[in-house]
Length: 408
Image (cartoon, rainbow, N blue to C red; front, side, top):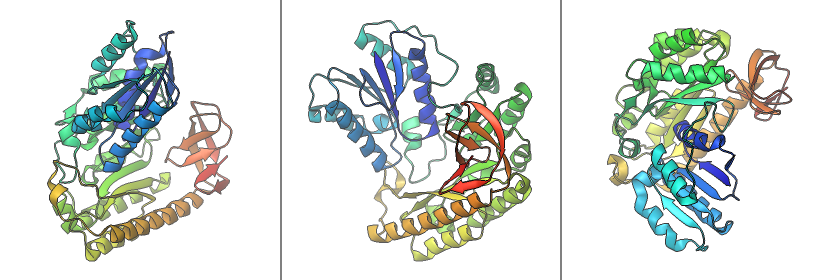
């Protein structure tokens, strides 16, 4: 019986999907797949950060229904928690009445028991240690969030911040290392708020493991500490940071309820980060929202000026998406045409910066983790194509870049 997982959104969702899929991987009754449209069971792990994410999940459900008969469609995740009625109502739109449709919360035990009841088979309950999908393993250290940014629905659908113990995380990652996993991404909804100290956790992980390299996922600018930068000088910690900036206008940051940093403090921290890690060719990416209510031409130019002045490698650009229940939902939106122009300006800026930084890697010796026979990532997160052995770390001198990738 083929069970296919479809995951939208962040690395936390990927971690959750892996956790659920692990129950089925070693059971000979099931064949686990990722993203395949033809299957007996589909688990769709949804995201609700934007209205587009909601729509993508609903469109996928319709597509799966159209292409399957007698399948079980299980919908879970953040969009379900925030919009469960929308998914319950979608059953009337499904064309193929032979398919079964379940909408449940993202509790692992509930998903397992629901599928077990539907297929009439007792699931073993023995989880595998290695991830079901991808070579690089994501390990979630926190869930939920206490920040309540005015645009963000996450605290409402994932609840308040909860941190796992250091011992629990160390135990999971040591098991991954014993099963030959080469890279772990430390992830969570707000890892900078990890209760026991992100830097303390990273120090303990470096002491408790020998071969794994560690990558830090998204951080608020204020959480890039001196100690974290010092730890990133160590070879087994990837020189890569993804900053949840959102805006470099102090007025907009205040409207967003992001009060723990300013445009100036962000700029100073990123320049300092790059200077301290220059010998490792650090990769710096940032999330930016355009079109937030209150962002006029002046505020957008402030953001652009800051970005032009710092060693930024890449942007992830989002247009403001009002989420019901958040403070920003009723704020007056900017004209859509103006927002699209601002988005395109930032996307062009990002493309130029990325290609320029990629060319600068020529002649550098980098460590690559091959995730398949043809694809991998460098320690500073540039994509690589060529020929390698899956789940192997290799050092290469970069001789050629092609488009957006390094060629080996």
